[in-house]
Image (cartoon, rainbow, N blue to C red; front, top):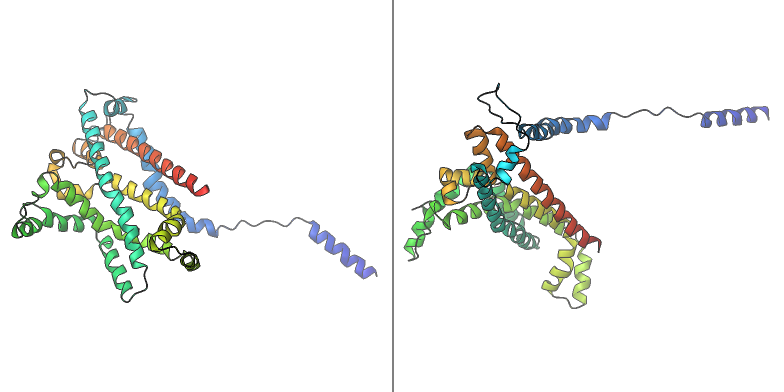
Length: 314
């Protein structure tokens, strides 16, 4: 009897004593490389760019960097008499034009390709690999390849002439310049979006399509009433990354149209920032352009998630 009472007392005392919680540092060690990378290559450059944008920053004269406040922002955004104002808004217009040309194809065509590749037929894995293969190339390889095809007197003009059609005119004039850059971009990157859509399509339960077929729904009705609603979160993601990637256009016009980008009208905003900071050594103005573009992209991304997210909740 006494022994049982002592055991009960010991049990109560043991359970009543708060145990020491040990902090497990293993998860933090796994995310430490990412935190270091994020801080060194994303967070620090971003905030340092904001700092630079407030100065007349010149790498060639490190001792002469006067504080100008918001003057750089005023020159690119509001001062119509400033050279930076004209160059900045011209590049913004070119980039917006490219977004309108490329994003619909990168989303709609990628979705249609994913639907076709999701079918059950022989050799589908081969086709999946073929469509994704260009994405493994660097932008330099893709741009050089399509420059050779679209340049004046190149492969495309040669075949157009042989079949009796007028040549496109190469990359030195419009519309050939934008057509070449847009086609090169779609060919190079559409495989990535297709794979994302394909993975999402395989997560849709087959029972939904079987039930719709029993109710008399055809393939088109199933696509718009089952596939599209089930893919809404993935659509938001693909539209967002396509928008951001197109807004960061640089390599294609830099290689395909080169120094003629400003004359032809294909100079992107990233090219303008590069020229302003690296070529003209006006780092303060280039940083102000970068911060302004980042703010606009952040706003567009937020609106994109808000609009599609609201539709998903409803």
